[in-house]
Length: 272
Image 1 (cartoon, rainbow, N blue to C red):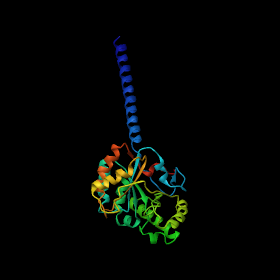
Image 2: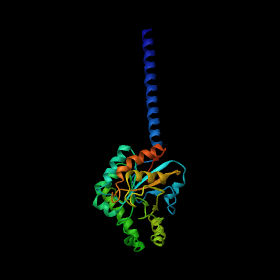
Image 3: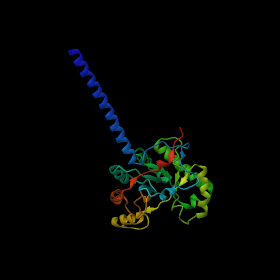
């Protein structure tokens, strides 16, 4: 009788342990699923064999047609020692991922900052090598070489061979009428390189003229009003305004409005 009793106890304990393990796995799965659903950002190793889940002959601006409350924070013209690390500190503190449209010559000057951007899960995108329209649009060979040279400097900085960001932002934006005919011609070059371009539909005007922090925040609020998905333009240069001084308030405002933060990793697959 005692043997049967202890056998039953052993079976019950085994069942309890089994059920406990199943519940633990279920809880872990739910936590992971929740985390992925509330964050659109993840790091993948981009290279020239990576490919888009959208047509490369279009623009990523199409995502702004969505009513989903997603915010793509983008920072142009860096990296710089004056601003980029401060911005990265805030993004890390707020657990937000962003996209940095880097200038090739500044990547060469500050490779460690670009490495930090990448290592912390941010998207490194291409903004040309010189940020000089006369050089960029001298001819299509010059345009192509600036993209390739910038990707090469990013490769060196982050330690990944043949890195290709696949996403380009025209200096001053494609929407600007400056060099418009050359930009139209450049679209074919981008397509041949498996690139798309992206502008923005929201900004705090931090590069236009000097604003107070309150004005910068209000500029963003007005620009975001009644919009679904946002591509937010800011700069990590501190040449005109210190965007890092208002970044935390900007993030908190977007969070309060129900936005989740994403990067352009969402649109790229890597060929295995």
